[in-house]
Amino acid sequence: MSQPSATIRLATRHDLLRQGYKPRAVAMASLLAQDAGKPVQDVIKMKIINGSRSKE
View 1 (cartoon, one colour):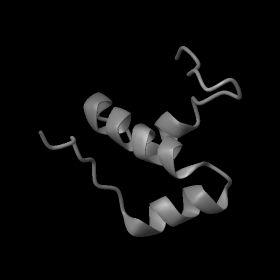
View 2: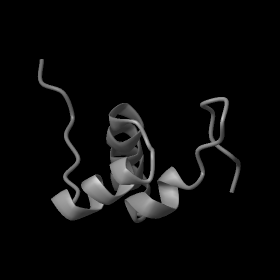
View 3: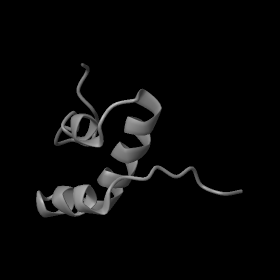
View 4: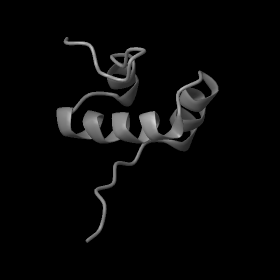
């Protein structure tokens, strides 16, 4: 079975990694953003330190 894929711009991915987000966090935020119809930057900003997501 194939994994779902969400495509984000390479420049966006590199920018988020430079900001200190882990690759897995970027990948998961990308999938969530695709499902929510939001920009990945908006979704990843919801991530909080303990790994859960804030409620917005």
